[in-house]
Length: 461
Ligand SMILES: Cc1ncc(COP(=O)(O)O)c(C=O)c1O
Image (cartoon, rainbow, N blue to C red; front, side):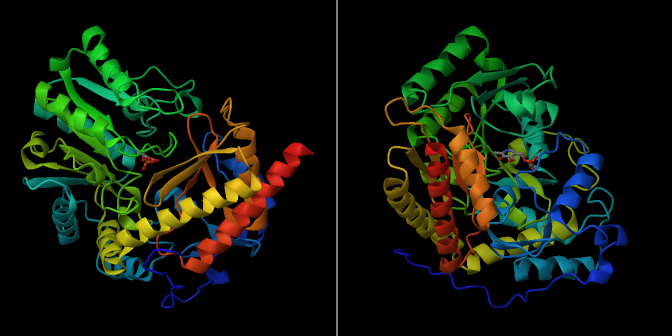
């Protein structure tokens, strides 16, 4: 790898397989992927789709084994949750130590220090030198919902502006803000009112930053009275929508527009945060300071916790009892988050992200030119939050979702877990743990190359 911060395989963590005695008999009886897929289909609602027809047995850093003993390199990281890898020894140890003390009291009944310590840490990490406060919840969608509630309470206004192609969650309010119909919004509306959509600047759709800003100004003239808008929410790097970074000039313009109209700027960092792009928060690259930030995913290295960080005066707008939830800021997840953040600091994972991003870009460009000339249309992202986009040809740049799907399927057969993204389903995103060794990264890239070659050959057959 050309850049610094080489990662050697993690030595500290033992490769522990769960003892067979802790596996329920019903599971022991059916240990093939096919059997488990059949049971799953009979027992689990089909709306919960899984990308891979395999069942996890155990995992370590950037590797995962299925119940049949097959080994996979993991470039998906449980959807951007594992910047510190599967079962980071520090994260697991912190969670176990917390479990030995207490696992739940509900912060609203008997508070505990790990919640406060995590809030202090988040306040210190978030951009801006103003006073900050934090709220902890359980999922990303819940964080987004609460950010909207806080912005509404702080401004006394109802409106929310989100962007095309954005993803903010699957609850009804966040679905209203999510800018993609299928599969998320299909058949489950109506959605809450006072949510407006502005165009996202997109090279693919020929929408420049100026076009996007004109669209927003038109929205103010036609549907969203600016004095009635509480918040503009944006992902600094579009996640599910295709790993497209928002141009910095757009973020700066949004900051100015929000200041002019007294609107809260919310950065949704749920997918882009905690080192994925080479900084703690992706918006830091632009120098823009948002009023509120939503966080989740890689904050806790695999434990369910999320939060809202924001200006102290804004965060305190909601009356006591107006925020929270039974499990919000669970102590085990708080301990895991504090450990994951410490691991990112101690292991230099921000620099590792930048180095990995540069390496992946270089290798993708070289593999694309050699294996699939004029099919890999775009390699984009920020730091190690990267995607490649496939098209049928460069002239029409028609999205090739079939090729993308085929690469993912071939990769799984060869031992690599990949995940797609994008409005047209034709992008592959890289969410490999930042703790992955150079050897594992190269192994995954070699499988990617072979899978792309196989998918292209199949198209030509
Ligand atoms: C940017 C963004 N916001 C919100 C969410 C919703 O998070 P969760 O799935 O934890 O509810 C996601 C999940 O992928 C996300 O990427």
